Image (cartoon, rainbow, N blue to C red; front, top):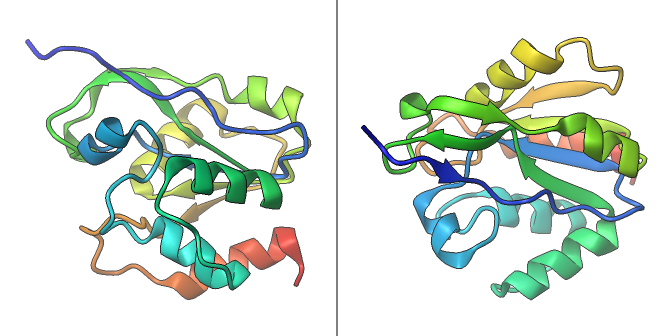
Length: 160
C-alpha cells in the first residue's frame, strides 16, 4: 500500500481573476514546495512569454509575479496515492474545494493544465458557472504541448 501524499494549499489573492488548476504536484514541486517546480516544465516559461517578463527562479519571485497578474494556482487533487509524478498512477484521491476559491476571489476563468486535471474537475465540478477549459499540459512529458493555445486562453482573461 502506498502512502498518502498531500498537496499544496491554493495560492490566490483577493484580486485573482484566473485560476489555473493542475492535477497534483510533481516530485520536484514537492522538493521546492511550490507549484511547477520542475525546471523542464513549460509553465513558468509560458507565462513569462505571454506577459513578456522574466520570472525569477525563486519561489518568492513566482509568487510576486502571480500576485501582480491576478493569477491563482491550485491542484484539483488535494491528497492521493501516486507513483513518482505520474498522473496515470493517481488513486484514492480527495478533491480540492474549488468553490472556496471562487467565493474568495473574483475568478473569471479556470484553466485546467492537462487531461487528468480536466477529467477530475469535470467529474465533480462540471456544472461550474465559471467558464473553464482544458489546456495542453505544460509537463515535459507532453510532446504535443502548444503554447499558442495557452496564450489564446490567457487573452480571454487579460485582453492585451
